[in-house]
Image (cartoon, rainbow, N blue to C red; front, side):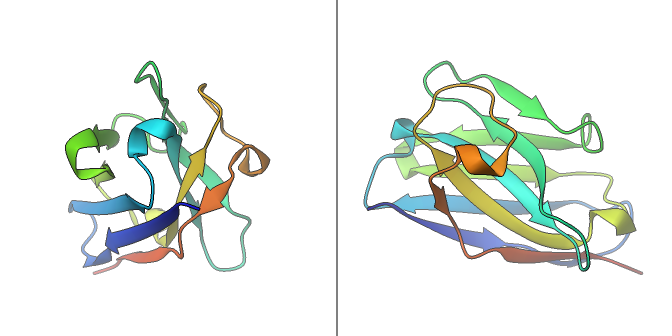
Length: 124
């Protein structure tokens, strides 16, 4: 069974940038559509970005479009989320998710595996 191991995150000032990464352990990242979700305190978990496989198509939540970029490094079995122009409202625990379905998926129930989450805090 694949495990998803997240890294990155931390504290950044508003307007700054940050990367979070997710590595698949026990299987190739090319076996999965990979996505990022986030959950802020007191709120439900929400979709952020997705990278499909096969196809390599990407999709983003409206709230992050133009600021966040999802990408893959298949040689390293890793998916990255580059976050630019960060806002305080981007503060959340960011979760990596993997699905065996190869399409743009924005709902949690479509994902089969989840990482443990990594905290991103945007504050001055």
